[in-house]
Length: 191
Image (tube, rainbow, N blue to C red; front, side, top):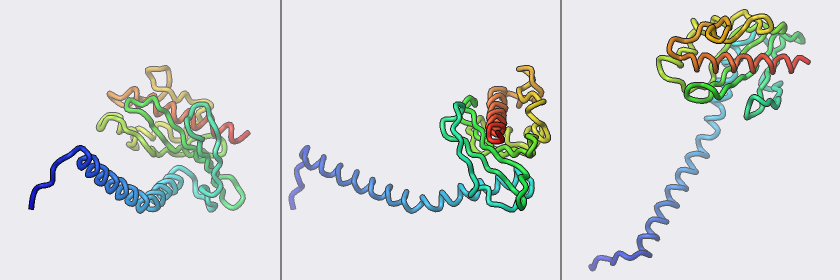
């Protein structure tokens, strides 16, 4: 049996077949994993809501309000939490793209008077061991039980009351900016 001659047409045809097969397999894997990814993302959001809000018995995810903001590329998500018919808190997703490595996205839980109950970092890509310490309870605790209407959320270097993370002042500033953005959207939602 003689070896097939290598021609430009044979090479293009072989490359086309391999590319189509790879594209189809990647597309089918993406379709198979789309549902489980969405379910996992929803579960993370529900767990974050339970951490940042007082006890509630409604479904904040079903009651979500999407608000357009000049400070965010996407709409801002606002989750009202009720116990029976009483508003017990509101969770707002705040973000800042001024982190050292880009986007920082957090969920902030507010009591009805605007006091911060708790915060959860949803997404960040900061430097491991430096900016990633924003997830630590020691750092987040600085924001607990503070009302941004009478508490300066900026880092101390900028005249505020928040201790910046050592070696990660840019990340700390972005985190505070995300909290401020969440508070501004909370205030707008109460109007």
